[in-house]
Amino acid sequence: MSGRPRLPADPAGGANLWAGFAGGLFAPVATFGLGLPLWASLPGAALVFLGARLALSPRPLFADLDPGSVDAATAALAREVIVAARADLDRLHAAARRVRTGEAVRHLDHLHDIVEQVLARVEGDPRRMPRVRRLLTYYLPAALRLGEGLRVLEAAHRPDAARIAAVGAMIARLDTVFARHADRIDGVAVEGLDVELTLLADALRAEEGPAQAAVESREAAPWR
Image (tube, rainbow, N blue to C red; front, side):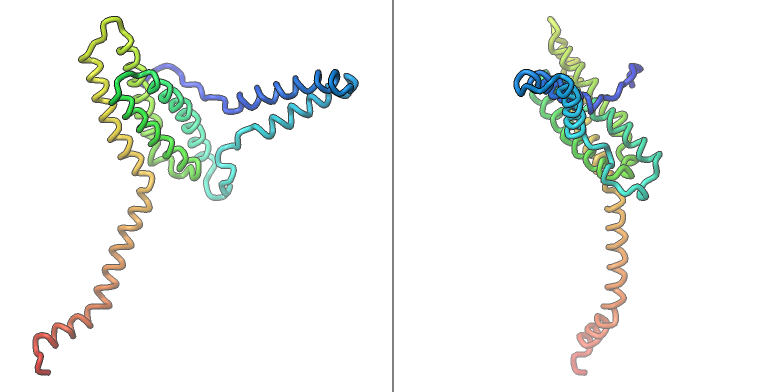
């Protein structure tokens, strides 16, 4: 993995920008358009900023989660991984838009879709994070490096066809790896289904056993 530090994205940056724009616009409009005195328009601008900031701010992760259903350490770890993965996912999407190799673009888009679905599931329940943590912290950054590297290789004055093909082949392999890791998020449910199938099969055998034995007995001696 790269030694470059990965800074989390600021999801509130856009909210601050638009709220500042709304608040800054309110003061001159109120003063010169509506005739309000400056001493009234300035506090009004501050209130507009705060209101817009509150309305536009993204909902915090796990806001709807029952506080007693997950411990603070699990939620904090999931939040940290999700923020970093979201930043990587945006860069992966941007890289895919600049890659010219059609097959690689298709795979990169599929990787993006898989991770989007995984993040949505983890945001719904951070206890799922351990099953997909390696996908989000290792394979996703690796796919990002490959996507950005492929773009650089394609833009070279003398493109190295062999290296481009090797990177494309690895991206295709990651498509399978991403799908396999994403399927692990439902591992507990699948394991529980296997247990349920076993218990039901045992119960049915116990219940149908005497009846089946009676049927076989009558078939063996039809004169009875």
